[in-house]
Image 1 (tube, rainbow, N blue to C red):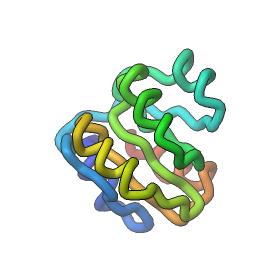
Image 2 (cartoon, one colour):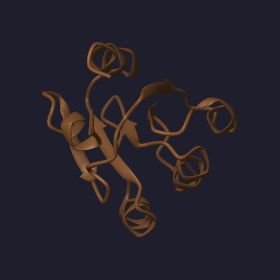
Image 3 (cartoon, helix red, strand yellow):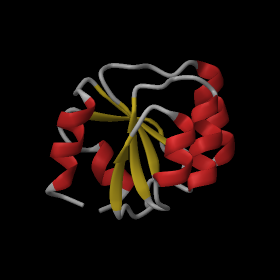
Image 4 (spheres, rainbow, N blue to C red):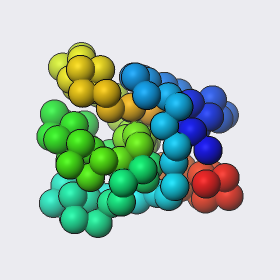
Length: 108
């Protein structure tokens, strides 16, 4: 499954999609950035409610396929511009993190 395919799912929407063809191989849910850096795997979807600029550094270090901002969390323009510049995909959803992961679990 690709990041673009996730963004096309009901309840999911692309916020920034510079690498929509990137393949996804799993999922990690977490909001403690140091834990995400140490535990998320390359090409994972990272589901979080964090919306500060540091998510870009963590996604880059962990080499995640995309960040999914759950529970209606919005990223500001600084984050969206930084994501575009770094080639980091960001998807948003109104779903709680658990429900987003359950939706993705049968597809990845």
